[in-house]
Length: 459
Image (cartoon, rainbow, N blue to C red):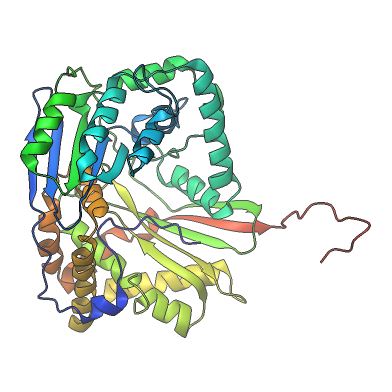
């Protein structure tokens, strides 16, 4: 399993992408921005191709805002947001959306928490009614909180503790980020979930779930003035409130290679390597994140990428190999490489093969043909993804919430086009430094298959 966090913008559509000329361009996002009197930002993008619309509310709070002792709090509160208000009893929120032919869900990330409804555009007002109601009208009941914390604990077990590669990734992050905001997992540490209190949930809700800490995004068969009128009607009356100030969250500079070996029941070994790199919010040299994004696609951009073509197919040293980088995090992040060694090869051999590919990037300029192909893939991916109203809403909301600004949607393509082979080599030399490397290895332990029946032989 490859758990790399891909760049938001990179979707590798191999057949069609390779046929799309580099001169193809994504159309402008046609986005309109408003700000309500209470400070809530509203982003609207019109798309009349189908009579549907997605409504999203993004809150600028995630696991990066938490500290030791309350990790997982943002995610638990996300669960509680479906547990009813005075107007909408517990269990009715999703039922109302479903009765109106829609879908809804939520997500918690390191940098944000978001909620969405995907419905017919003629039901837009229903989404506004529901989201504005629970923004400040949530019922936080002890009995419901107790149940949901247990649900999150089970989720943690199923997604992390019982999945060896996910567990390795969690421990890798804890080592790679010593004091930075991405040290702890989004779902929280088990001991912190055990000790969460009702007052923690109340404090978190009152601190962060305010209109001046939120962005409303609507994409679909709507008109900007229509959305603004509904936003003023439903969200406008909610008063602004003071939002907690956050101190600088700067990771301690790394002064040597860090390694950890994780033992867990597993079938195959697994390797993760990370290097600290800047993102758009932190880069002093503004083109570097785009060069890193291109570099990631050189290594892991589909079947023709270097990892796939050389390590998986040609050398057959890797059963799977990937690279990942997201330029739109709020804080300094990591360039990630991961993979599983092929049968008959070791993790050490796989790591050496990864290192060789990194050294090649440092010493050789990528050819004009390969660079052109990579850029064509990136641009083609952006063109095709804009057919999805959900994708466009996700882009706008995420970019605005992490502080980059939604305008990057329209700037990204030109920035990628401008990346040169020399810039790719320069970021490889600057950031892929052995003493800045963090490595996590999953060492498979025997999988306990349980007791064997005496009446029936094991199969």
